[in-house]
Image (cartoon, rainbow, N blue to C red):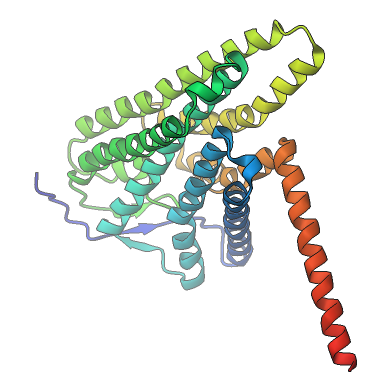
Length: 323
C-alpha cells in the first residue's frame, strides 16, 4: 500500500527542562554512551581472545554485548546531536528507520535472553548431556534464530505503522521514535496497526518469558535437590547474573509494550525508556562481570599484564631519556 503521509518530518521534544539543564543531560548521556560501548567491546574482546571462555554461555554473552552496542547506538547519537545542535527534527524515513532498528534489537534481545535461559537449564539440569546437546552448530543456529526473529517481527510492526497517514501536529513527545508516540500522531484509523503491534508485542515478550520461567523453575527444582551446599551455590552463581538481567529488562519492556496504548502519560514513558534503552545496556556488562568469577579473573589478569607492559615501556622510555 502506498504511504499517504503528509508530514515530511517530526519534531522530537526530548527532555525540555530548560537550557541550563541541557549541558548536564548531554554530559550524562555522552558518558553513559561511551561507557556502554567500552564495556561491551571489552566483553566481546575478552570472550573472543580467551580459550577458557569458548563456551556456549559466553558465546551468547558476546552476542548480547554486540547487540547492546547497536541498541544504544540507534538512539543516543541522535539524541546527543540534538543536544549539541539544538535541532531535534527527524525526517519521516529516518524516524521509521530508527523505529525499525530499535524494535528489532529489542525483540532480538527478548529471544536471546530466552536462549540463554535454555542454555542455563541444560547446564544445570542435564550437565552430563550438556556438551553433546549445546554444540557449536546449535549455538550458531539459536543466535541466528534470535536475530532473524527479532528483525522479522520488527519488519511487520513498522510496515503497518509506516502505512498510516500523519497530518500533524508533527511533535513527538519523546527523545526517539517509539511506537506509542508515533501512533498517537496518526490522523487516520490506526486500529489495525495498533492491534498488530499489540499482538506481536505479546508474542515476542510472553513466549520468551514463558521459556525463561519454565527454565528457571526446572533449574530451581534441580538446585534444591542437590545434596551439597557447595553444589547449590555453584549452580546459583551461574544463573544469578542472567536472572538479574531478565528481571530488569522484562519488567521495563512489559510495562512499555505489553499493554494498550495511551494508558500512562508520556513523561512516565520517557523515564522508563531512559532506564531500559540507555542505562540497562550500561548495567548489563557490570552485572555479568561482577557476578562471574571466570570473567573477573580473566579481566584481572589482562589488567595486570597491561600494567606490567606499561610499566616496562615507561621504564625503557625513562632510561632512553636519561641517556
